[in-house]
Image 1 (spheres, rainbow, N blue to C red):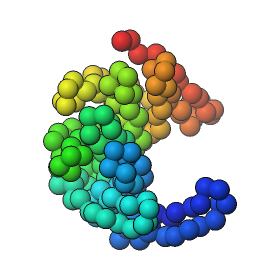
Image 2: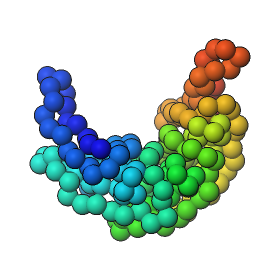
Image 3: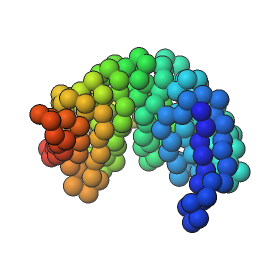
Image 4: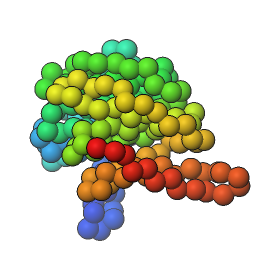
Length: 183
């Protein structure tokens, strides 16, 4: 229920920022110069001033249930937020901090990856589905999905656009699937 600030030079704890609920993912937004945190049990996105190390604003996320994973499209001022409790993907306009789109996704969505060059969003779900979306202007469109057991982590290489999907147990062994999407 807190974000802990660590001094990168010394490794020492600087402060604890109480969030008032369970923390999901945390990202720095270089446009607003704030750290954004998904607070799952309050269904909020919280903005923290990294200079003062204090919460400066709380934003309710209507229609969310346990927002957890998220990523930011800084250029278009959008946040893509996965909600574990109701299997929903919410697109939030970071200028207004209001949801502008909602999608039903596979159960237990977790990690998101954003490919800014190809404007593609990947949503990995613990239920075994990797969903792909394409951003056209300010509108997100579903492209398709891949099924893979325990596909809850995803990463994308912004240079090659390859998508990396680590799987914890395929026939008793971990496996890394690498996808090379077409343009």
